[in-house]
Amino acid sequence: MTVDHRQQHLENVRSVLSTLVYPIQYVVNLPVAATHWLSASFVTRSKLLEENERLNQEQLKLNSRLQRFAVLEEENKRLRELLESSIELGERVLVAQLIEVDLEPFRRQIVINKGRNQGAYDGQPIVDAGGIMGQVIHVGPFSSTVLLITDPTHALPVQINRNGLRAIAVGTGQDAILSLEHLPTNADIHEGDLIVSSGLGNRFPRGYPVGTISEINFVPGEPFARVSVLPSANLGKSREVLLVWPHDQIQKQELNEVAAKE
Image (cartoon, rainbow, N blue to C red; front, side, top):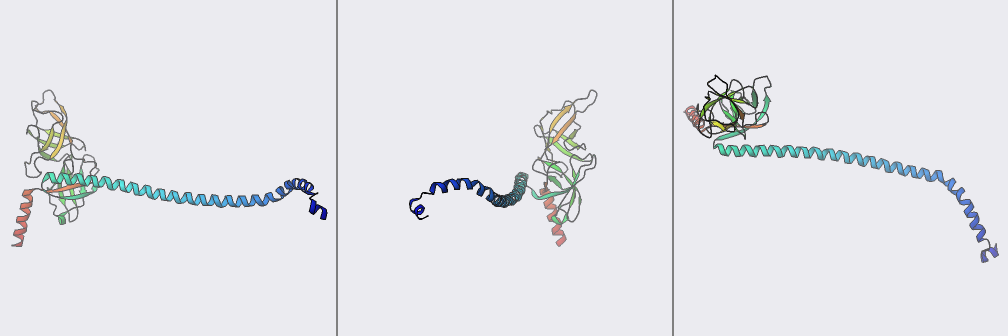
């Protein structure tokens, strides 16, 4: 051993024995190594699953926020359009929201969240950013019922913007169609003509859009043409509307307030 220690005569023998023994050591240590590997893999997989679940939850929250932002963006857009239309009107206006829609066949009414406490009154005109929508027919303390211009019982004095020709726009019970009454077959009308309120009857503001002529039919033997009008207002889509106080109505309310004080 002393000689081997000094001269390393058995080094080759040890090398050979180490090579022969290594596979046995590997096999003996394999279960322990496999156990460590499986344990580490299980921990890693659990962490990955937890991380994946957390990321999924964060993604859902972010998607929800994005959807809400999109809704707010559209709402701001609609309110800006309403504000611009109120400036064009030059009247006193108040924004209201729809809270109910009457879905009965051939009946077109909505309920808005403004009533007598906010100054609403029977017959008050209602518009949106596109045009005239209808008028108030019932006023409660906190809400009002609005008869839309497409209701079969509604009639609106109008005129053709191009030439001033007067007519009556009557509801048909359909959201996208009005009918112009009492226009003779030789009347100067064309498809695409803009129809505006005439102001007659002192109910609706004069010159506010009502719709555009979409179809003209001439029936042999009938003295009047059948004229269909596409409403300018988004009757089936608007969520916010404007209550309008014409100048004469404001003066009337002011006189009533003065009389009540006296």
